[in-house]
Amino acid sequence: MSHDSPTRRDLMKPVQLLGMAFGAALFAGIVTLVSMGFFQQRTADEAQRAIITALVVAGVSFIAVLLIVSLLLLAVDPAQVAKQIDRPVLFDDESEKPEPGDDPDAAASADPKA
Image (tube, rainbow, N blue to C red):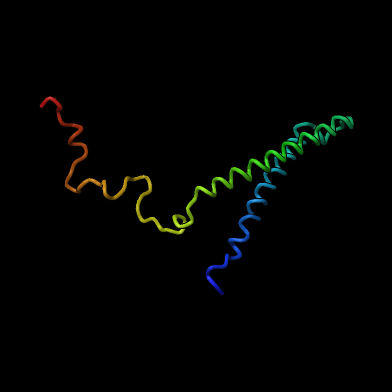
């Protein structure tokens, strides 16, 4: 088997992305139907208006989730994901690290007029 061919996991990523967007759209549509009182006794006109509104909300949320998650995935470098980090992430680079004998508080506590 060649290493150049995509793996099954790589091929399933678009399906996972579509599934997540579909799940969010389904949730938004159901919430819209419930909030508009579709499951209560309403006239046919009010029920039709609720269904149309729910479909619009579901479509907008499907597209929004698909677009946002796709753009967030583009910001991630796959080489950086697989690389192990052995240092604290929020600290500065190793090159800017103070010397062990230096006291960072000494400069701040020194009298500037002296």
